[in-house]
Image 1 (cartoon, rainbow, N blue to C red):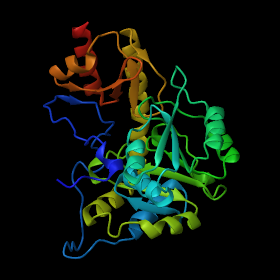
Image 2: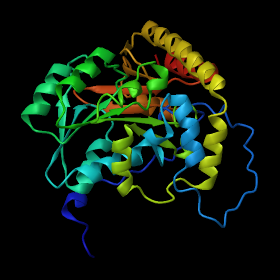
Image 3: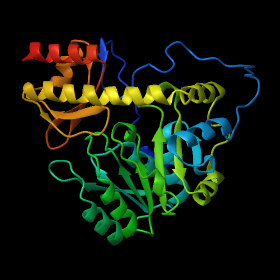
Image 4: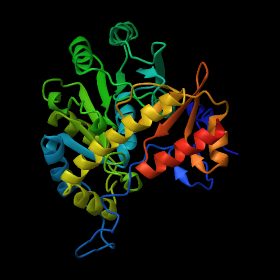
Length: 340
């Protein structure tokens, strides 16, 4: 058998557990509220390639994000765009730095192109020390620094003043702000893209818009940077159906704002319910909670009852629980009470 290249050979394939469930709270997916009745496409022509530039979609995104369409490149989820940027800028052996724990795919994308991933440990409470990141970024001469804000899986929100401090302190590295969950925290630095040439912000319609199945994300940066990275953009990367559905979803921003407001209310209610059950619950700016459970093997026990959550093993076992609907959260709490 012909072997894969050395940097890829060691990777583990990504598989999603296909198990029956009653309640799915393991992947931070949003609710199906924007397009639950489907969507309409006029003059559908599947025989033609889609608009490679996603022109209409970028125009509607620009209105939502408060920038120009020229500041946006669209991809199959923000994940594809992060991978594109790492591939475009990193030569073999160059360093990409991020806090750990964080989104696991950062390291995978580095491994794919032969870049070296440097994981900087968070504090014991999972807070992220920006001074430490700045010092290590300078010391190790990193090509790219990625800051997930709010952070996945811990939910930690880096204050805006810390993000600005990072941008002011580092100008020889590309700074990627992964804001996949920013709609739930009201913290963003999209307004700074023209002030900092090395800043790239990643956003997605997978979470707050509840459109994870469409795979639509956005890379937002100053116009010069976007044009530069466009050199390596895959042509026709967003299919016709995803473009049209996303365009119609972006016509309903009032519903998105109502939904994110409700998720934050449900997040607080779920937090209080879990704390009453002696869970340690960490502060979260996302549509999920990061917890330490008093119940051993909570992940396996809930899965046996048809309730899916996510398990993480660091110094000990933690769980990440997506904030579901009121009914889903109620089922979760009832099952935990029975287990106790």
